[in-house]
Image (tube, rainbow, N blue to C red):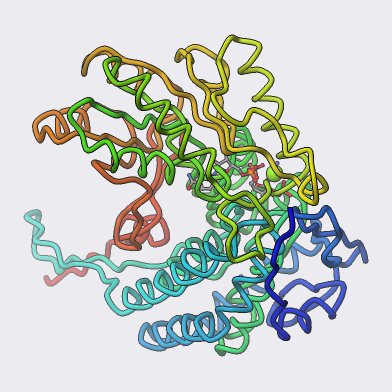
Amino acid sequence: MATKQQELHPSVVKFLSNSPKKMLINGEFVSAKSGKTFDTVNPATGDVIVKVCEADKEDIDLAVKAARKAFEGEWKKVTPYQREMLLNKLADLIEKNAEELAQLETLDNGKPISESKAVDVPASVQHFRYYAGWATKIHGETLPVSVGNFHAYTLREPVGVVGQIIPWNFPLLMATWKIAVAVACGNCVVLKPAEQTPLTALRLGELVMEAGFPPGVINICPGFGETAGAALSSHMDVDKVAFTGEYITGRKIVQASVGNLKRVSLELGGKSPNIVFTDGDMEGALRGCMGSVFFNQGQVCCAGTRLFIEKKIYEDFVSKLTDKVKKIRVGMGLDPNTQMGPLVSDDQLKRVTGYLEAGKKEGAKPTCGGDRVKEGDLSKGYFVQPTVFADVNNNMKIAREEIFGPVVSAIPFKDVEDVVFQGNDTTYGLAAGIWTNDLKKAHKVAKAIKAGTVWVNCYNCFDPCVPFGGFKQSGYGREGGLHALELYTQPKSVWVSLD
Ligand code: NAP
Ligand code: MG
């Protein structure tokens, strides 16, 4: 397939000409102590984009020391209003460099440029501005104690040095979700981006320095999970670790945290039910299902991958959905007409095609897709066909495990009781969708579903003021809104005797 690709922005070319890309420690871009580098690959072609310096234990230790020094020194002198201004400056710089950041994101991750421009970059700007506003509004309280003559109050203090480990599906946005709230609350951070997608985090590091953050407040160290990630989560001088990724890695993070009993928050995977009742707006539900599954190549933690359809409309709905899915334009991310790009890596391609085979073996029927893209230019990249599986039951492997690709499993249900039981019959609890025009039914099901977010007649709606996170094995702690401030601050109670 011939594709019309966007020209690379001159600043992207300049950024990439500087190889290997160095990590940000203590306000300086430095090489790894070991001298090691790794390749970051363009998933649309399989070609190496650039080499990146590989952080290991020693580099993480230097970054933690820098963060500690900043936290106990320079950063303490910075007022809440100055923190607000620094975060707003960073948001302005992201906005100013939006085109470059969007292209870098698409190159490194594969996602369509239209999405990098419309979602990843502007949502990052909005998120930084939202938490900039909070910096001046975090405070303790005075308390009316009854046990004697005291003036009792709380101070709300930052936790300290925070280690943050993120995945590759929204590289810039995940970095933003982690850094903005931590810094607004007065913490210092060491961020480890995913090895597959380190570029926008490193460019963000340049903008952090341009904004004027003191050295050591934000450190960015790309490297591998088993080395750099493990060093960060087990470090004895890290006060908190915030992690987004798979539940299996989440368990390792918790185990690694016990040495100094650091605080842990976990944003893990999902297998979210998206429930279509007969009485809903069918066209809206179809559009919602498309977005809920195929956005970002299906590499979305809250994707509505278990599509529960009421029996009476099951055949009709699956057939209409299939017609729409067949029309998705799969292509190079840098082509502005592309609606779905490649998966992020060869590993991810193997994982997803493995699930496609498993689904067929268990008797699920692909009504479209079902394989990788094997012809033309796209065969060199990690492209997979958008796939609808019909005749799925909730016990099949494809309905139980997170595929993290453009694959939806259509499962029939009888009534409210049946779908609430099946919807909750999963180890995950991240999100759910409900499509109905019956108000009572909508609220009843929203209450009965065990998930951190429920969308009614919509899907994938996000705002920085709304908390996001999981029930059950989808994790604990919330990002966004007031709730995230709780994770990054701690109350100190002060008693003053007035006698
Ligand atoms: P992953 O394999 O768990 O990796 C996530 C991060 O953890 C990466 O930076 C990884 O480094 C690092 N890591 C790996 N092993 C580690 C270890 N032993 N110690 C410390 N860090 C380690 O997840 P992924 O495959 O990148 O991302 C997909 C998963 O993320 C899915 O399950 C998805 O649902 C979840 N997710 C959840 C949310 C949410 O908000 N709930 C949002 C987005 C994604 P390397 O890259 O070097 O392996
Ligand atoms: Mg990984």
